[in-house]
Every structure is written in C-alpha cells, then in structure tokens.
Image 1: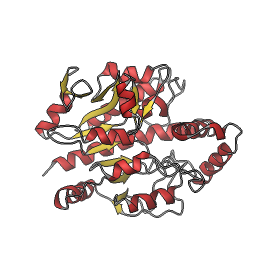
Image 2: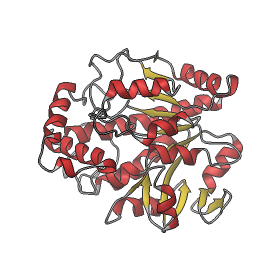
Image 3: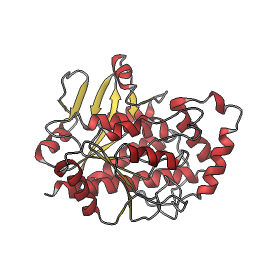
Length: 335
C-alpha cells in the first residue's frame, strides 16, 4: 500500500495514499492524524526508561517521536479504521504517509511544522514539515469523493495568555470553524487562556463536547479546574449522531470539538501547570520566544519541570485520542 493515488487540482502538490483513497470510496472509516506532534511536539531522543502505561512494542532506547509516529496509526487500525497521517514531504501535501515517510518526518534534523498559513510557502519551496491541527483540517477537506470527517490530536491551539496585550490566537480555531470535521483531543493546551479559547469557539459556532466529564479537559491536567464543560456526552454513538445532525441534517460547515480527558493516573495538577507556565513566562529568554515557537517552548519547559511526567501524560492522551477517534469514525460510518 505504499503507492499513491493522485487527487486534487494539481497532482504534483497533493497526493492521497491509495489505501486512504480506497477507504473513502468504499465508505470505510478514516481518521486523520496531524504530524506536527512528530516534528516538534515530542522529543526525538529516546527516553531510556519504561512508560507508566501499556504500550506494546515500546523500546525505551529508540527514538520517542519515531515510535509515536508508527504507534498512533496502529491504534487506529486495531480499532477498525484506516489511518491517514498528514504531512508535507518535499513540498507535497500528502494525506496518508508510508512507513518511510513517517520516519522522514520523525528523523528530520531540523523539525518544522506547517500551520494553514505556512502551507503555500512550505509547498512552493519544497520543504518537509509536520502539519498542525489547522493544516490537517484543511487537508481533510481535500479528499475525494468525500472528505475525512474525523481527526485525532493531543490538544488544539487557542488563545494564548496575555492576548489582551499581545494578540496571539491559534489558526486552529478559525480553521475548525470552517471545517466539518470532528477533532478528538484532550481539550485545549493547558498553557493557554482556556476560558478565552472556549469563548472564541462558542462565538465561532463550534460545538464543544466533553466525553464523560462535567469539567472541561485541560490537556494533560486532570480537568478539575473551575471550568465547566459546555456539553457532556457519555456514548460514542451519541457523538456520531450529533455529527450527522450537524453536517447532514443542518448542513452546517463548522467542526465539532470532542474533548477526551487524560487518564486520572497520569494527569497533572492544574495549579502545578500554572506555576510552571508563569515561571517560564518570566524567564529572561521568554520575550524572544514569539508566535509559533511559544507552544513548543512552554511544552518543553513543562516536560523538564515535571521530570517527564508531562511527556508521559502527552503520550498517553495521544494514544487514547487516536483510539477514541477511530471509535467515532466507525460509529459515524454506520448509517
């Protein structure tokens, strides 16, 4: 399945893996995966220690992000769906990556990520980069004969703290508002201004659902902060029915945000996260960190200051979200 079927108006710039193309034509459930987590979200170096949760075939002496790149598609397959990791390889936007291409993203000496505003530059100059939530959502709408309706990630971007002084709002929000895709995540990254992000999603008309939780999940936090979930749903088939109503019955073009809480055993305390973020923002080198570099910087500081606990939680929630996304995709495929 390493051959590509070409799609799009310009076949040299957009390529869809044959397996993904066949699945979409046959009505087989497909789940898209963003790849910025491979290039900038998870360390390339080995952890040299076991994980505190079950990960078959985990090798503590192998590259962390390379193992993640191959593990998430495997989870989706085991749950009954076809994985479609999205990435930019040598200037081509590819929907569904081969094993070799996953390795290429994971082992690039200088990992890059492409948001929706970066795609044209990355593609026109022949770059290789992981796609963020926004550019992956865009790619979901480019498949034929039907779009990809479900994608999985860790946490979406949103409104950064201090936005009143320095407006810093992720392109994920606007793209989610114009992409009829259900994004399965663990909420918005807890380093952000979470209430402001939820207000923005409400204003954009994006339904936000917490899975089996009354409090809004906060990425790798336990979600027990004072932020109520806009909506709660406890069954996968209910979520799939909401998506059908959103897109088919009502004909709305906005996405759906499904927030799946991180496991309680690995969750960080929200107060601890706030303390680390505040301290990181006061560090002498932080003023030089701007735009796209802020989130990777803060996530790196979080991993360091929690002695790896934040990274463990991140790996676990990415796995759980891939599995949940496949379950929703399978349910959505059942008419």
